[in-house]
Image (cartoon, rainbow, N blue to C red; front, side, top):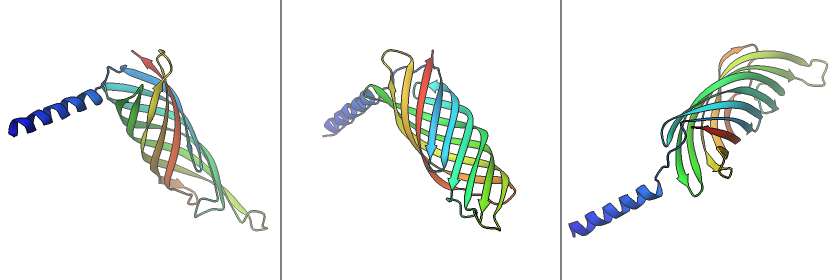
Amino acid sequence: MYRLLLLMIMLVTSSAKNIFAQTVLPQKNIGVNLQWYPAGFIASMYFEKFYNPQTALSFRIGGNFANRKDFSPYNENEKGNGLGAGVGYNRYFNFKKGKILLGADTDVWNMWIHWRNNIGLPNETNGTTYTLVLQPWIEAGYFYPVGKSPVQIGITTGFGREINVITNGKEVGQGWMNSLLLKINYAIK
């Protein structure tokens, strides 16, 4: 009985290793991504360094373009933009012809938010607030190779939080957010 159980464990383990076996990935990726969220979008370039066939650190720089409309609990209208950077930890798993991505990221954005209140009334007010935003988030998605080229296209979804760490001016919106990302990367061997 123990031998049968041991044999079954060995077969399952062996099958699992074959199912989730990782092929050798490139040591580096460079790419661009567009990230849409309910109150705007982020355009960025990124660099990814692999430390083993399934684990990589990513670094990105880009621009964040916010149009929060009336989502903010503080102001009737908020629009703004800023530059930022981020770092992430990514795990890849082979699945069919492509790869599943699971990642955890943290971005920092320098944002200048233009706000308005009492819009169209004689007592309308407006101003600009500077805020340093910390944005931790997680993502999951799928990358698919483009033919036999070193190019891959990925679609991921993310969930995280905008946290205003430093605010200079009137309070502006922050909170939970979800996002959809389109990524195009080029493998450097």
